[in-house]
Amino acid sequence: MVVELSAVRLLAPWFGASQGVWTNVIGVVLLALAIGYGIGARLAAGPHPQRRLGAVLVAGALCTAWLPVVAPLVAELFLPGGLTLDRAAALVHWGSLAASLVLFLPPAAVLGCASPLVVEWVCVRGALHPGTAGGRVLCAGTLGSLLGTFGTTHILLPFFGLRASFLGVAVGLALVGSACLVAPRRSGRVRWGTGAAALLFVAAAALPASRSAAVGEGLRLVEELQSPYQLVRVVETVGEDPVRRLLQVNEGLDSFQSVWQAESGLMGSGHYYDFFAPPAWWSGVRKEWDVLVLGLGAGSAWRVLEGCLPPGVELRTIGVEIDAGVVSLGRRHMQLAADSPGRRTLCGWDARTALRVLAPTAFDQIVLDTYANQTEIPPHLCTVEFFREARERLTEGGWITVNVGGFGLDDPVVRSLAATLAEGFAGPVLALRVPFSRNQVLYARRGAAPPSPVERSWVVAHDELRLSLSRLELPGSWELFGPTDGLVLTDDVSAIEALQRTSLGRAAEGDGEGAG
Image 1 (tube, rainbow, N blue to C red):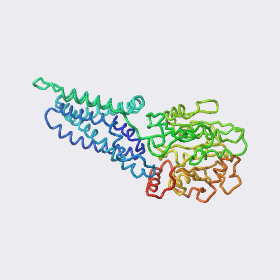
Image 2: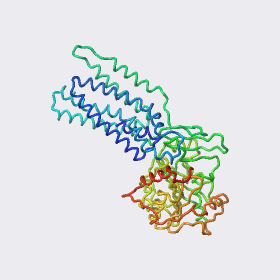
Image 3: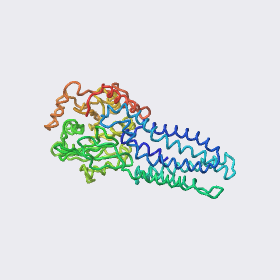
């Protein structure tokens, strides 16, 4: 279980941790176990099952210990560096399957041999009925799986990391296997050599430095860490003025989750965060602007809003971020503000859970920017039911702004989310195509329609923001959506993952637009 649960985390810097990647890993492990059970059944028919068990455990230790070492080489073989997200899309699912076969089938198959051998050993040594021996082994194995499941998620990965988790399992397997191998023969002799060599080989796996996905050209690594959810790192631009820092998760491709620059306010062309600012200008005079950011990241939305609100308007805000590692890096390197009156971070909370906990608090604006691995929208955060819950947390006339990754307004993900949002808010949805990016921003309003570029209320009194909005007045840069303009997603039936695969697949074939 330690190997299986850690496997996706090991591949995540290259392939992400989507349901497709999980399916590939679990499928490969199940196939490997079936192979291992078959081989183990044949091995169990021979003499000295305990020594064969020892050899199997030592072999499993060797395969497991070197997984963190060889994983970068295998992953880069099936997903080479330098690819954009859309070009890499066609390789992600098949690449993760191929990498899983190469990396995880050998150790899982070898370890699968152990169960029949243990049953045979217990049966012979205790003179037990096969059913009794098998039941006891299954009971012990299931309890061990429970320990491995909870221990991996709550102790090993958060406190020791991937490398130490794999090495710890390998050392344990090597020790138990060595004990089986050195069990006295009838002649009284022992076999020390194989066990000692295995332990030395496992120890050698701790020597090479681990590698993550490569940092892109023109970037310098500031800090990197393994959070309980993903690989997280901050990189800094080199040779650019002004210097910017980017927060990346689970990837070495051409994307980022948050952006920092020294001055708060608008970030300029290609940055969708700027388009979270217009609702405050479209809403008339007020003293405070209460904002809930779902998917805070390192706080890019906060920094844009605090530097781009109408004069005299105070920003009051709550940010929700599920990953504490992201928040810690944001506070160390990207000026993510600590909690204070009027500003609060809910760290470690799922966005939908936090939305319910915050009831009956009402907000002027909800910003939804929840992504995993840059392209994966969590299915429970893009349904009619979720958008209805969000609507109930808004003041009358309040706004929701949604960042959607897609390749134009005709992208299947964009159309589906816009239609779903329109159904949830019972009104039209304005979609803006962010120039020089692969992002679209959706706007919906409680009890009112959002303005469109053909209306006078579209124009705002902020020079830079007005210029940005004026670039979107051309046909093809904006569209109003209703609930019949795309596939509506529900908690019961949500095809968001299939839509995302279609979107990226079309882009990889040359039908998508934008490179962001």
